[in-house]
Length: 349
Image (cartoon, rainbow, N blue to C red; front, side):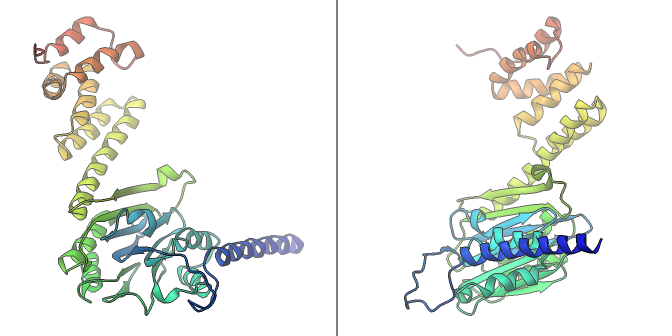
């Protein structure tokens, strides 16, 4: 037994050693700029962000906004059962994947951040925040980050910002996060909006993102992602991000409805579909499929107004309905089909 434990321990050490080598290889060697060291031009993500965990709901993630294109693709990182990372300012992107790798190996957020900073010759221009799946938080704002720059931490969260109009931005974010009730996504959105209301990025606004995963992973990555939304380029990125969150919530109800339907729980499925329609009343697809479900299960009269609304928007939906019976997605009932298709407006000549 003792030999087996020694073997396991040795394996862990080797694994951590390999991770350390990866870290050291992917971040510039420690040294002074201009003295024989070739610096790679970094991505710029002068921005504000928040990393946070909601242990009760079992969710953790990152939210970010910046005057930079596609900020979510470089700043925000998260993995279910592991942690979340925001890497910004003069971005060293590898803080994201390597941070997750170290936390996956059992390192705390603080230990992980310290290890990465230790081998980074340009730590003074980095701003990085992390939260691990245990709720431990770590953050670094280098003394060469462009003012106004700073951070503030709290129970299970960290707010950080650089190149802000005012030095009160990260404090406003923290207050908004702490005082907002509801799901983690709502609290993250409120934090971003508070930053913008406080003056935000001195250059303005362009892109935003939210990435939320579960604190306990199932090993099925697409099921462990709760939200993964980006606004790449928009004059009002936060307004667009909030719209996308609402849309994502509605589609979660649609997806749940589909799952219930496959379990032959029709009534429960209709309830989920109805919730989605209420949340996004102008989304034609969210009207069409519930109408199909209603008509297929005998509630034809309830379905007709829905079909009429869909067909009035685009007659291609009527054509799609005609194709469903041949693949078993609608009853092979010519009379029923004709009754529904009669709701379509006449074709224009």
